[in-house]
Length: 205
Image 1: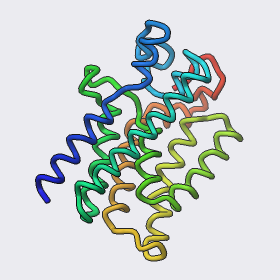
Image 2 (image 1 turned 30 degrees about the vertical axis):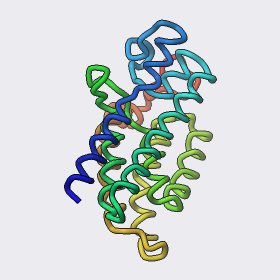
Image 3 (image 1 turned 45 degrees about the horizontal axis):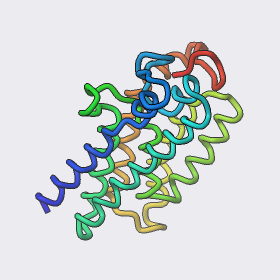
Image 4 (image 1 turned 30 degrees about the horizontal axis):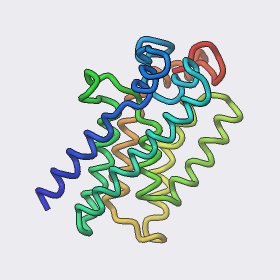
């Protein structure tokens, strides 16, 4: 189990460290996404800097690497629920602090969606509907991201016995929520002060 866990975490982190927003920016426009807009290497900043096409690609690929990390953990872990949970967490950490790009990454929202939706689909779906609705209503992407990570452990706990989710998955959602709250601390401050930038504005975080 120890070897499987170590291998899964390592693969998850290395996979998560692939910064698609950085790579697409370099390929298409010869730019470093981390030096433009909000400086965040993620889909929202990609949308502002490069447009819808690249942003959709970044979003899909960042979600996919979270899904892949979890499934690698499932296959290697041989039924141990802790392995895919930690492999998914490692992918999120890799996205946030990528080893290939000087540990300067994004905030992990899309990769978090991939990881959590793979592990606890129904709770993630409920939280996701609320998050998407909040983005449509308020146009605050950061608020939607925060609602998603906050509501997921709540819904997972409430549905733990209904869907027979392992307790390790709940702890994973809780850890991810705490990590995301810390990564979005500047957004939280701006939301509280009313100075957060909305989707479509000239500056997006």
